[in-house]
Length: 415
Image: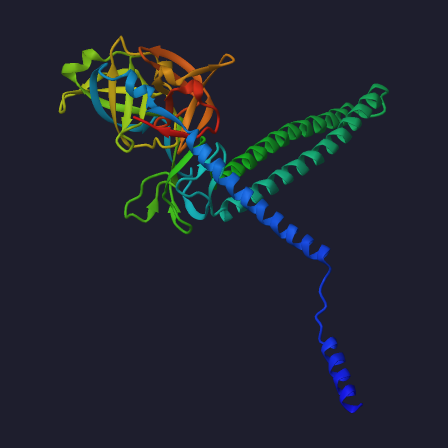
């Protein structure tokens, strides 16, 4: 019995060590979800790779050209004379105070723009302020005296009128009547003199006020400050003084709108220059920038020492880069030179311009893509067309096949 019991206990112990398994249905579902996720990832990777290959394969092979400046093409070979000169300002002033005084404040710096009437400096005004206060006090005293005389005159005239009436009735003597009349007339004369004194005092106040105003230095016109000459504490004067201790100016202001070109032309070639003649200027600092210009006048006198004649040339294209005293070279153009409007914009090949619903467009090359750009066209010269607006010199445009391109299309650049 004992051995049978032991065997039974071992059987029960082995049965208790059995592993519990999950149902078959749950196990199969987990496998399916995992396989589905892996398949979706593979599909996404394959689709991305296929799209990239397809996009690279759809890139359009194009030819390109560089947009060139219209001004450089238009005037090439049309110059009848070249001359060198400088940028000058027709309107420039070294601003000074009208009186001699010590500077108390300077409100300008080089490169600053000022408007007409702006305060650029102030001078010490202690003496002028005291003189103005004195003149105002004298004016007040003159007006007070005038008011007293007006009161006395009104009283004297009432007395004169009463004495006249009494003298007519025989109640006062003629001597009393005449005396009262003389007093009234004397006061009337004094009143007129007092009125003139008031006018003199008013003029004195005006003079002192002007002297005080002259301690404030203002810009005579709008422009750019090119020189700051005075500092706080220095003495300035409108007149030149020896010794170097007195400044004659606060600063220099240049009207940038008055800039023009002055060139010296050899008198042997002055017959090639006429007023209103078209020209083209090139600054030494910007040799690739062609500036349209026109002759203003030929100065009717020659420089004997240099055998040259001065010519004034207007700058037709204002720009902040043009500064006074810059070196410049001017090409005087012949009669067959293009008009000013033909000097604007750039030139590109005609085949690079596509008409899209009546609007001319070009495709600007940006790396491996193109950008659709609406433009404004101008003149047509042979196989090239002028782009007045929409492009700048140096832009690269597609020249063909533009009909197959769209905004943002991928391209490869061929020969």
